[in-house]
Length: 441
Image 1: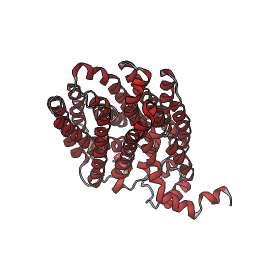
Image 2: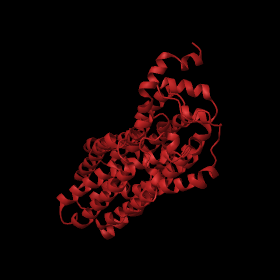
Image 3: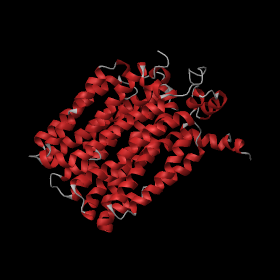
Image 4: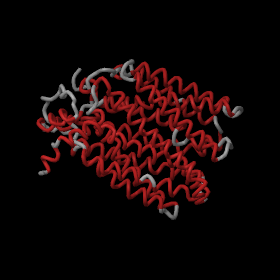
């Protein structure tokens, strides 16, 4: 059988139809596992290497900084060379860097390995993110491009904490090595599965490859894009930074970065926040696990309504709710463990029910196909830098201000509300992707 016949075989078409969205989204499981595992691993790394507060922040932030670089560079390359090639190459880097991190013998080796892992994650995020939006039915785009990757992301985070709880008693202070190294296994499996996926049909259209695009639309049982006849175009930075697209970039980047800066309290910085109360390593991991499980349940609940309600309204009210929960942690958390846990769970639940998912959806809906990967990459880049800033600052701020620190981060959600109020185009529920992205008004 020729390679062309193999690509068009009924078996491959059936596999693509049933598994493409899941395999692409599974990259977020790897992202969630690896970028959240640092919170659990740091509980073991800190005493193992005798890290200072500054070194804890630097190791935690290194992967986020690498991700920020990968997001901008490879978001652009995915627009130029296609989604498929980029989201396969990145996993090769990830597998090797994960193994290297597991065998690190000093602080600097660990920093470099975590940075490379971040670059690999940054290669995947805008590519798979754009791909999911481009193969989503308009009536389910919020669920496929927002809820599904976040379900995978949180599942990865949950897996990291469960492994930390299971491995801790068995592997002691070297638990962090296992936590880093085991990430290579699912990454290798996804790498193999992605060999059988097609290219994004909308990207093929944007490059003038109409016949190939129609075949992929048919393979995935999707209606052809309404913008099928538009002229082939190549994304450029100036196309992204000027005019209406530039204003959209500013809005979605600001919203995404601010909600991630505040939301990191319930994710990557969560173990450090909880550990600062003196509840102990085991309880810290258990409460972190509970927060992630609540987040997963929130995303599942949000997936039911995200394509049915006005997304702007959903964003405004959930952001206000997260702010209120943050105030509760800061004011009542120091005096009541029950209040701390209760408000921490509410903070996590509302973050994931609304802004955590909406930021993903809006950051691909905002742009036309020719610059969708780049636009998503820039928004996610600023987001990862915001998370890096959070994890660098949080150990020092917790030492100085205690749980009042959470109030400072929660204020980011008030700024998110202002952005949503000032951006009426964020009411994208039910719109065609081209209309939501400004290709057609």
